[in-house]
Length: 376
Image (cartoon, rainbow, N blue to C red; front, side, top):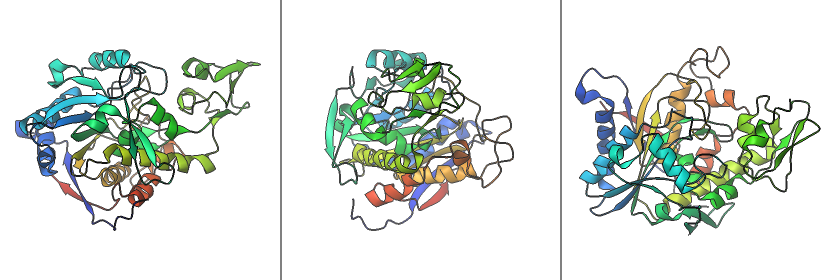
């Protein structure tokens, strides 16, 4: 673990979505946040700069807008940097499991050179074997596997859609670093949990069998069954099961999972001190990750954009802003959730998103203490 001294509150910059003039539109707000957060100082002339995004699974349409990514690309170019927009291949089977399908999906969603003004590069290579091992002072790992082109980049700007997640509770900058910058082998290191079926809840629909990338889910006597020796712990069965018949031992497995995710996030920025910046987009705050092939209704109204050089503080500020909202009507949340209620715990009762902040602080990744500064 890191012996870093306690940090001062981190500066988190916030722009709401109100606009009555061209210089207040969303593109202008992203540019102002880039400057206010000091990201101009991150990029040196000639820096190969990774812009970490999430292109969305085919069928999802609430991912970050490619035009917003383009605004960041333009700012990097203005600093003299050489940007490329990137993500890593998925552990589960889907439209982003290899680089060919992944880039095709990205282009379908508008992430191509004509829109971005920068190339799309899948950072872990064609079949997720472009890997750099990074040493870290972790509780679970002393080395982590990071996608090679992200590890080798001179600078890193991370663009995250802040939303729910069935295992992590919520996904923001830390999850985009930890899971999103890892190749498949690194993703499997982090998950390392095994699912079982509660037969009384299972209705035998077979959806888990259809999505299981490892063939661990089968039907036996009209009920789903998961072979633990084959299961890779990706959680896709949990996402699609209509009766939530999939479970793990949440009391013993969820905290170590979250700690492993945080340690991978630490590894993703290791060696990039002063060379990494983070945007979180608090729009279309859906219950699920953009890895699912659908987009559910938002759970709270759109809030705005945030930026910081501290990913832990940034995620904490976003969580607080979400919880300050009343839930949207006719969404996945239970009726009656209002201002101050914990929205993601209400969605995914077993999650421990708070570990992002405690273990992130213990690792020296960042601090949950922040000063929110509004940019107008």
